Image (tube, rainbow, N blue to C red; front, side, top):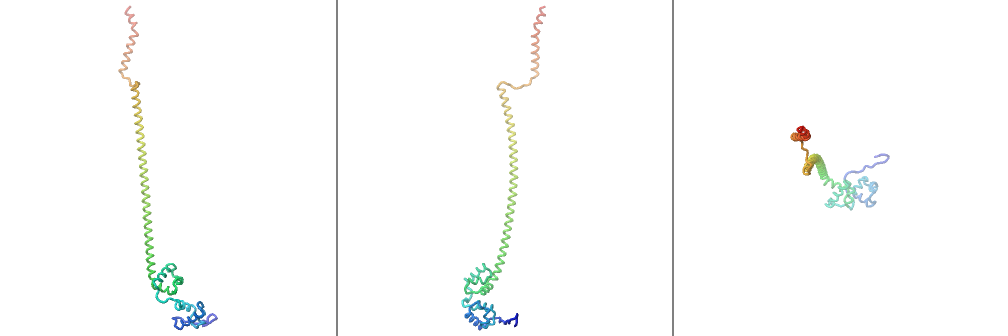
Length: 233
């Protein structure tokens, strides 16, 4: 087929035959790995370079391990996949003799469905944890509001008690002052009595009569000589 000024050969597809495998192994033994685009020209295979490389790496390499993946290798796959995800070539470097394609197929066969189930379970747990955290925050907020309200009530009670205490103190102070003033007055009166000073006593009508009679007696004393002279004459 003529395409773009050059003839493009029609590459063979499908399963590899035993003869094709033999030709590819012989080519690699002679020329080494890495010259995959020249395989068709040098070996006579009707396969493109990519197909030859994958066939060699995944099936024909002499250092490939045969048989099922061991539990130890499975643990490594799980650990590295948790770190790096679907980077199969990177994971294959830690498993000598195992190819990235083999590891990928093993993962998809044994763990892909489990991984989906685990992902759903993880999502569910995450939602539950978020809901629990939200509910806990709401409870804490309610407790804080109740605590603030209680503090406000306590402050009002304290203010009320202080006002009552101030009123009582003012009343007691006034009572003590009145009592002290009364006590001082009583002491002053008692002192006057005992010292002979006496106290003010209002005059009575009897005292007025006594004074009047005293005046009359005094007038007789004044006019007594005149009366005696008149009698003598």
